[in-house]
Length: 149
Image 1 (cartoon, rainbow, N blue to C red):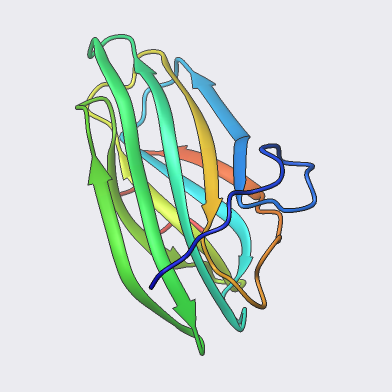
Image 2: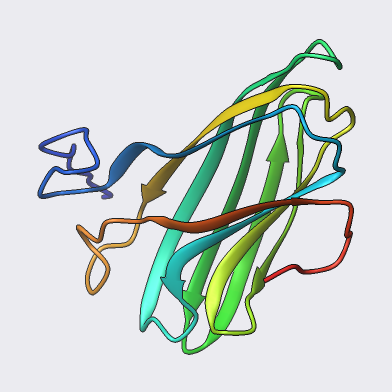
């Protein structure tokens, strides 16, 4: 029978760290078509299962944003990439490893005039990554469909 434990805290600074709200925000009026998010998860991490979520609003498109990227990283390989989009304001399009060895998230946007979003992280691994705080090192808005970092 499966069992689960609720986190003891729900905050980025909490000792458990399974649910981390608002690890990064983006608010822009620039013209671009893609967003690249560089996380602080090294690609050589022994093991981690994580989901990132972007929640917000795309003003010009008049669409809500709720997209997610999930993956399992084990033995220097990324497994089970899940990309999910609930609304049309942003599309989670991929997960990749940066040139300097960090996990990155890729998204495309349909309309770039005034976008605001918050990024949340959910660490679902037990064991070596349990309680690990997740952070964002950099966010790039670009017209480049390829990997930026």
